[in-house]
Length: 363
Ligand code: SF4
Image (tube, rainbow, N blue to C red; front, side, top):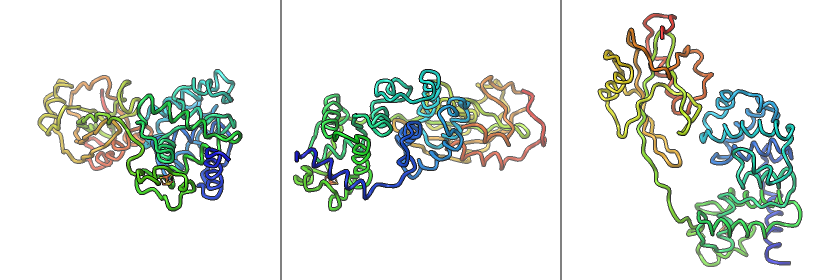
């Protein structure tokens, strides 16, 4: 037996005994497998299961997802982050319905042509749902292969991507590529973890070059870190009677299509006086009285650190609000998809006394 087929055999028998029983592993339905693969990118499995089940309750088929409104899709996605994935998911469902009659194509190239579907997702769906001979390469696979084969080519270099992709393909068994792929990923998730890997329980330890050479902690290698950008978001929950103002996040920035209260973004932290004058400038009105900041959150995204602060204010009389501000009844705010940190600040509105009971805004 060659070393490579030994590797696959060890992995498969370990996987059969030890794999986690997850809902998307009980099906070959490409819609469900695709959904789980998109949801689980950048999301912990424990968190992903609840989202997966709620999504399937709301959209049991690709037709149901394609027919849904973007707002509903984003609302169900709320809290998972990386919202472009949700928009792509929605667009891909529509494409599957329009161009493939509602059936996922059993073909890597056609899957790859769907919005938001990269090499990884296309290979996962092709191999797991359709049994096609394609290797997946995700963070777990990079880590396992870099260690087992002692490869220090940076995984974020062109050469590294090509080398690991070729190696992963060469390890595929003749049949059931889908289970082999899941087994490598599961080993990376459960045993060959980034820190403190469980080498003593590892099914391929006897053939792991990094373990033999005491190089586990230094693999895999990455060549460069992405620069992180700091941003300062100053939010004002503006109310008038039983209404509060929201605006939709614009295209081309984080959280596109989600909703938030009026925002003053600065290049540094601003105090109440500076936020008030920015608001005066924005609305042409001088009598704003801000309360706060009452709520502060630092939020870390992959390439951005957001420093957010929240104020509340009553809309002054006679103000013409910017066209982007939309007055929403407070009781209906939960119908609008919001970034999780914004949603968590809505308690501030509940604390605000209303001046004029149930009257709505004039603007
Ligand atoms: S022996 Fe340790 S480093 Fe090697 S593959 Fe197993 S868990 Fe990873």
